[in-house]
Structures are given as structure tokens and as C-alpha cells.
Image (cartoon, helix red, strand yellow):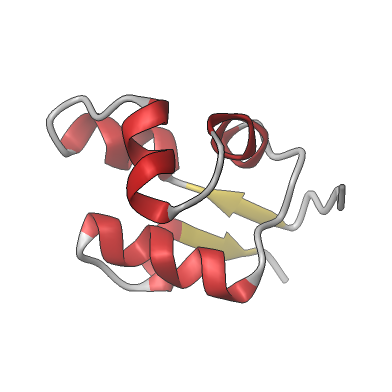
Length: 71
């Protein structure tokens, strides 16, 4: 598990903006586990690049709209 406070995400907001999608539904659509979604939302885990792209595609948006890197 990687902890990096410089990367934040909008997954929780995006889930609710997309029909109040559950963590399990997002996990199923992104082909990962619900525990992974929980950890990402909490900022305790930074996803791989491929998972970041999968998550952004589930929401129909860019990776930069899902994740933010604070320099």
C-alpha cells in the first residue's frame, strides 16, 4: 500500500453524481475489489495507472478529473 498525500481524488463525489453508484458497482465496472475503492477514496492507496484510467472511463471523464496531483 502506498501512502501519498499529494494525490487526492474525487471518486466519492463522482459516484454520487453518477446515480449514487455504490462502491461495489464501481469496483465491478473497474475490475477491482470494493476494498480497493474504499482505500483509494480514503487516500490510503494510490491506484496503478491502468486502474486510474479504468476508473476515469467508468465515469466518462479524464484521469485529471478523477485524480489531482498537488505539487
